[in-house]
Image (cartoon, rainbow, N blue to C red):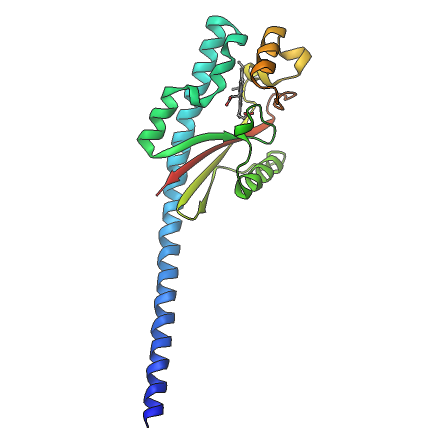
Length: 199
Ligand code: HEC
């Protein structure tokens, strides 16, 4: 008799345990899907603003003082508007590439590496991938492709002899001795915006 009561109690404990687990799983699953959609929308608007900020600063610097002077304007860290965007959205804005000029912009982990490979491949397909959010423990990582979208990019990322003038080449070499980011053509895949949101 005692034994069968014990068996029933154990059975009940097991049942409650699994019911709770299933519940937690479906709950977090649901919350995460909604959060992914929210972070994708937020990422899209932050990336768009960051892109506009960066292109504006770069174009103005080239027009005002020439390409060699503008070299520092392709560095996001140098831009206070980007820092304001980060503060306002509690995120970290960066760019990664498989051919970096600044070695700090290389893939940081396996997710970054996979994203760079997937997006580079999809860039050649007829339906290139849109932005994407990946959850990595408590972080939401947003990715969006960057292409060589305008001829001005080639002044610093194009064919070394043809597109990049001597003065600019020299400054790039001095500041970035490990530069890999040349030889691009218009519309090439250049890398990814990577925006990390903390929950
Ligand atoms: C005036 C020169 C110049 C122009 C024009 C320029 N870039 Fe850059 N680019 C740089 C420099 C310098 C860096 C390294 C910045 C750093 O230190 O983080 C860089 C870095 C990058 C990176 C980060 C990955 C890496 O290689 O470090 C991307 C992506 C990028 N540029 C895309 C573009 C695109 C797209 C355009 C055109 C809209 C463009 N650049 C125009 C000079 C330039």
